[in-house]
Length: 192
Image (spheres, rainbow, N blue to C red):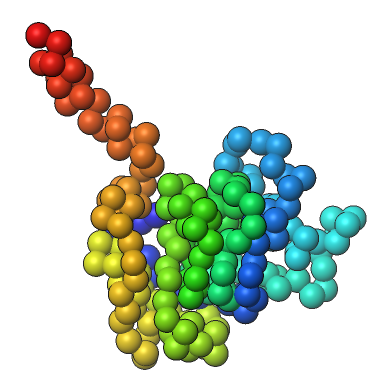
């Protein structure tokens, strides 16, 4: 995530509801704990056939990392089984944020813990973005706002701790390690 807390990008639309984690990254690719390289398996079954050849109807064919950093998807995104690999794959594929009207709780939690920002919006915002592919958006994590060019600025729910970690590119363990000296000092003071 951006160290400034700002993400400016064009959107990439995937107008499908109920996208589950097995569609985001199929089970056969869950054999690693390495995050790097998982992007090649992101939406694998939608992008490739059983022989590994690109599908003619690949809905992600036009996705360009660095250009399309924000995915716009149908409601109930990330449903299904719990997989940290799902946000890992999406991040490695080039997405920094996902906009939808609803996220599965476990997927949302896994995303926030791993650096992918789930942005929940009202139906009218999603409808506008779906009808305007490759639209410019500006995400301000610190202010918890989504700016949609020509349509408005909208607040989205995000806990302060998640915003803190996202803007610094850290996770919960990194947060603890940042405060290791203070923790050690506290423990020493309590022992005496």
